[in-house]
Length: 65
Image (tube, rainbow, N blue to C red; front, side, top):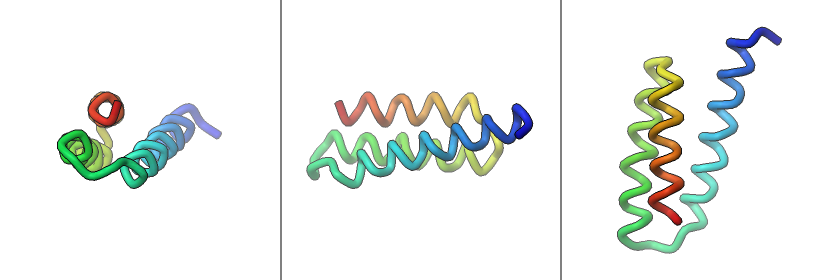
């Protein structure tokens, strides 16, 4: 596996983890805020911007805490 492929796998795994946490979170303002960050992460991931994807996923995780 090349380092680039490994990075993509890590991003995809992190997205799955954050999405699962979001799915299990109770409804409310924290979940709403996390959704906005997750959607930004999806957009960054589509644009192949791993740094921005990680930043948005971290923000989503923080919003759920």
